[in-house]
Image (cartoon, rainbow, N blue to C red; front, side, top):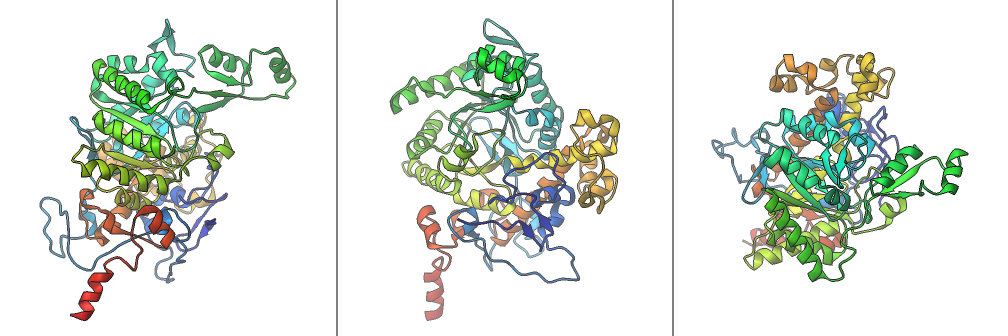
Length: 546
């Protein structure tokens, strides 16, 4: 098993806890004072692409990223001549073929195209309280940068202020807040996606959203996620709230209605309750029944008026993967997000997350294989997004290449949430009267922030870029978490541009599987990506023999 280093002396980053493949700590805290790579890039942006202390150092690769089978055991190919996919107006001269001229714009969808400025999207940010607390930063950051954000499952169901009549939503303040926040700064790039699970379907979320927002929203059917193979969970500490959730139709564990549970809570032996969602398709017993039900659901959503529909699936086995690709393609869905094991969670059973499902790289490699079978038959293939433990610019490039040409963007969870935590903590210190509203966790700026300054203009490398976009007067309404999000996204975007320029690919559609190679034979076997010294070895030998 690969053990990821806790420190990176070259770029000056440190993990507070045990790091995972993404470079994030296994347990990521909203009050963290630094300073992993994602945390620090939320302040300094693209500076984190380079070794620190320029002029005083030289730096060498640790060369430990190709052990075992993971995204880090894929390596990125580079070429010493040529240029492909040059955007309009760019020539193949050395003056034009520079990494800032690499286009990162992409799109997904069938009849209606959704435009995106950078090839990434958030994971589903649903009923967990941390999603609600930092939503302004998440959503405004996504809208300003121009990538999709997903409102996850159960947002209406856990909202005490939501009103239902005959089991159907008539008022949904929290869901409205989430959608409206994004749309306030939406400029034609990105999207707001609303997810449906069993309870959301019963509660009439789809009907409510289409009636109020029309085609401004993408609706997403949910089969599962990479962090767990049961429904979503949250934890509550109030027995009254637990009973409210039970009354709303959720599974609550332990059952707050039981006298013995009430007595145990009264004496402190039980201090919290877990709310669970239901499994889907339990009444179905065959692949054909699932397909029939799925197609009926899609037809119903289209009848309601939805022009854009997506599907999110988890790290199930190969049958479910094939079903998701085949059904989504036949139903002409706009996007299929495939979430492998190794990603993050708001609250999943820990050992379940550690031990269930297919790891991301294996699942994504098979997704390409199955999609290619459809394409080889001349069939339409749904646009795809890959998810599951991806956070860094090299992982974005590798995922796009592994699934090319079907993968249009990369779905990332915690790495697009950390900037919001960090920005909110900083804003809470600098605006102490708003600390509680901002969910700030600090009383003073920690040394890792103070070294950059004491004002947002000094701290955030992307501050004036955001100001240029929204205007000086509007900056007072932009949360620091959104500024941090912009800054971190700028680092990721610049990093992807640099990797693409090195691969001589100046448009995302030109990224191909030949732009990566396997760092070991096991990865070659599992992914179908050739071993690095085998790539173009025949061409090299012809050169030597000519």
